[in-house]
Image (cartoon, rainbow, N blue to C red; front, side, top):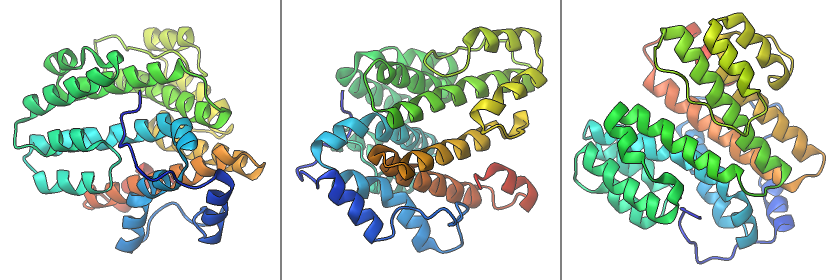
Amino acid sequence: MNLLADLPFDGYPTEYLLARLRGRGALVPPDRPIIPSDDRSEERESREAPAWLYRQMNRNLRQTMTPVFTVLELRTLILCLRNKSSRALDTVQNLLSSSLWSAELKRILLADQDLPAAVGAASLWLTHRLEDFAGLPAAFDQNGLRGFEGELYHRYLRASLAGRHPPAVRLVLTHLVDLRNLLAVYKKLRWELITPCVYLAGGTLSLATLKNIERTGRVQAMESLLGPIAGERKVSAEGIETALMDQLRRNLRRSGRVGDPFGAILDFLWSHFIRDRNSRLRHLCADLDPGTLDAELVA
């Protein structure tokens, strides 16, 4: 089920990799801010960190961590397709320069074709490797790239959660399920959408409770759900995404500190993912007032 590049290098033993990370200072210290500076070298480091880490891991560790690396690469795929729709091929090439997707999928995304053709070709490639992706073109035809993105994440997370994983890996997957389910409810209530939410099983939140919130339209009830998964902090509905991403970082850091090697490695990966996300938001939303932008960044 591996969709990523098959690397020839066998990597290093896990303990040696952890020692390399600590020796280089690569494990993000607790007091190092997640919000990026204006230093573009730091931005480049965070963008390239997942591929660097994946290359250092031995084959068994890569196999164990593949679900998390792949779900993060889904974001790269969506960003590439968005930029293809505006014919920004230079941006697509830049996104793929540090991507872990296989060379075949990269060639598809770099081909000179319009968005529907690119979606069709990428969907066919994905479905040949994982049958759970069947139906992605129909989602695009019905609801555009937003519908394709939702189906892509749902189908991959559902397939991944069916497997056996170490606690830290499952923590990431279930947290992402909770995040997508909560965002689905929030967007429906916020924008008064008519289409019913499509929920994904496997998270920590009761689907019956989510459906009841959707039916009654009580935003306050949704906010009360956030306490246990956001570290008992008071979080408004508008801050769901940043709060849950930050809490996942805290949980992974706690796991790594008690000696879980998977938690330590995923702490490094997730922290750099957040840095890269924050950097992209700062560049894309540079015209926003500082207060509005800060609210979108994971601190």
